[in-house]
Image (cartoon, rainbow, N blue to C red; front, side, top):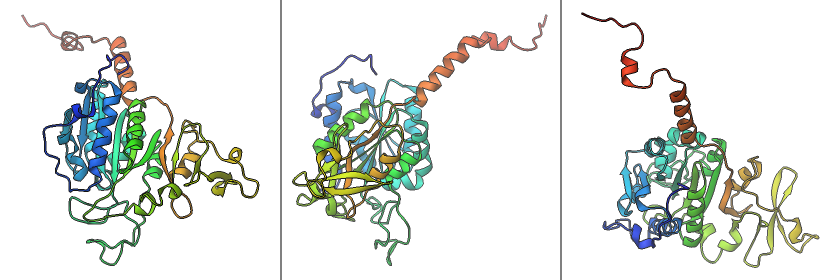
Length: 340
């Protein structure tokens, strides 16, 4: 897409004529707004966007975008998005999915699209519940949570999205909160500009079946002390008074108070999302409150070869070296007979 002529848009240009039918107060509304703001900043012609989805509340997304789109079946969005991108590498392909759609029935497709590093952008709406099908626990639901399918509490360990992405050799992982539209917009822009699979976990609220699930870290009165927004090349400092930070103590991250025990700004770790070694990224992605702040922003963004580019190069090489250049060559190859 580097050669595309830049086009100026405003967010409204990406709004379809369809009525948005998410529940009032659902976090999906904010995600939709952030995506439309991001696309307007990219300068890519509208006909170069394709939004692919599976099943779930999040998967209604293509209806609300004035772009090309495809509403797939449960768990298969990654497979469809992969095919779209490989068939037409010039498209900016976005996969809209939820924690159930991507990580349960779609789990196999999810890890392999990440492993292959296909240049698509995956926004994973994580409300830690099955919202569309009325409140069953999902692969990211906290252990012990009581739901319609776990009346005595779940006995399963939940997936960590970041851990899963990095474990599948992911090169781009970011996290945002639905209510922070400005942060989300910037992350989506960075994801679109990254060459390779970009996974963004959007912590999203389901007002009906899991209301307030992220309030512990995302509520206005606590978010500055319980989350940290990572920025490339900047110290990992957080807190309402910017007086807390992260250091590396042995093989573990540690939260420290700046100004205590001789700790200064210079002792705080500097974020490097482009570090090839995933060790620190893995720890950052897995930080949980109350021991740590939850990491937001772009956690990992490492350049690397993409699947669709490798496929295109392979096809070109085969074409150059092939003895068969046309259908006629194919029909006349091997043993042939002339019939009088």
